[in-house]
Structure formats: C-alpha cells, structure tokens
Length: 262
View 1: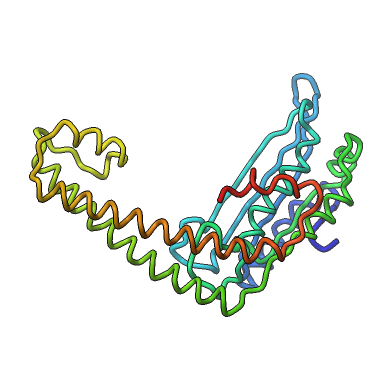
View 2 (view 1 turned 135 degrees about the vertical axis):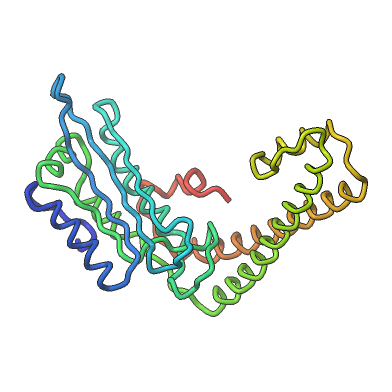
C-alpha cells in the first residue's frame, strides 16, 4: 500500500525525511504521520506516540494553517485507540476536499494535503498488531480515504467565498476603528484589540458612549453576522456536495458528525 510505509527502525527516520523532501521537490503540500512504540524507562510499560506533521507551503504563503504538528500519547489503557486517531486525523485532512488551484481558504472547503503517508518501524507494526490493531486494515483504510476533484461548481463557490471574506475583513477593520473611537470615550482607555468581543460588550455596558458610535457599532456587528452566515452557507453547500463522493472506512462511518461539526 503506497500510503503505508513500514521499515526497519534504523531506516524509518530517513524514509520520513525522504518523503518530505520529495514533496518539497514536487511542490506538494503533505502530511507525514507516524506511529512509534516507546517504553517507559521506569516500568518498561509500552507507550505509543502518534505524530502528524502538516505542511502546506505550496498553497498560500500567508496561510495561517501552513504548518501544524500534532503529537499524542497512547498508554497501555488506550493503545488500540491509536488506529482511530490515525484515521480521524487523515479524515480531517482529506474530507475537506479541494485541489490547491482553488486558492481560497474556507474551513469546510479546504484540502490540507496532496500527499499523505503513514510511517511505522517494524517493531511498532508488530506491537500494534499484537495488541489488536490490524495493520493491513489500517493501511487500507488510510489509503481508502480519497480526495475529491474540484469542478466549475466549486470554482464558483470559491469565488463567492473569496468575495465574502474580503467584505468580512473590511467590516472587521471598520468595527475595530469604531471600538477604538468608543474606547477614547471610556473613563479609562483600553485597547480593544486586547479584549474579546464578549469582554468589550461587558465593558461597554458600564460606560457612557456617544449614541452615534453605539448605532454604528450595532450596525456593523449585524453586517458581520450576516456575512458570516453567508460564508457558512457556502461552506455547507460545498460539504454537502463533497461528502457523498468520499468513501469512509467502516470505523469512521458512524463518527462523521463527531469529527466535522457543521
């Protein structure tokens, strides 16, 4: 199975680095996932480390999710959960299914990786098989979650999302300016960027501010809420279109709504 790499402990680190370098050479975004067996030096109990390194350097230079590194630990009480965790994280990186020529980022419309490999050394593969994880089955499931090709419908939706997000950005900048003007009228100035929206509203309730600023503030907040609702509708439309085209392994079919919140 091309997505599952099992090698000797001495070579597996090099395999991972070769995979990452090949992705860089090919200008592909990638996820390198690894399961590794370690032993507690105090009692020799087994510990499984799950790590997942995501790189999207070739998607968008300003992508806030351009890099991500997850590390999770599985102790003797939950060793078999490693398989579910592996699949769930690949699912998260796959069901959000666009090719990178659609350059707009949206939480429910993005493809994180163009290449995804799962790595285990031989000792780890033998151990997780002994504790009840079917390595071949895990590899088949890992390979079986496929991305969906983009089409003109998705391109149109992406353009809509881009336009809406530009509007949203401009409104949020406008709201920040209004908050700053309000803060100038507070008994004691507080930089609104240092407060959450909820904290700012709570503070505002105890301050006397010009009526015109209050009206402007409420108007822009309503506009932001409306734009965010429209973006949510775009995301839902894409998700509805793509989810029917993705075949999930049996261990994930019943967990769709736990993994992706719409």
